[in-house]
Image (cartoon, rainbow, N blue to C red):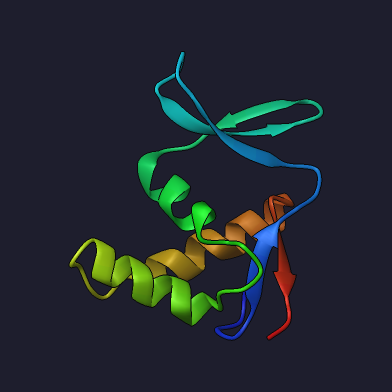
Length: 91
């Protein structure tokens, strides 16, 4: 489980980019790629190692005028860490 004060960042094995042929964001890695849905892309774009989990949640709640998003965002971030997409930085 990712902590609220963690500062997640993309793992060095992954690169996120917009792929026009798929009209979506993807994660590229040495063995292939993962096509992201819109919510996943919005969350991962904010994982820069500077923002805490709580700051990411707050930004998303403002950007989409929807609350609460905490449980959904933390659940996704925890899965992304387990998959190796993200590293959990310290605050």
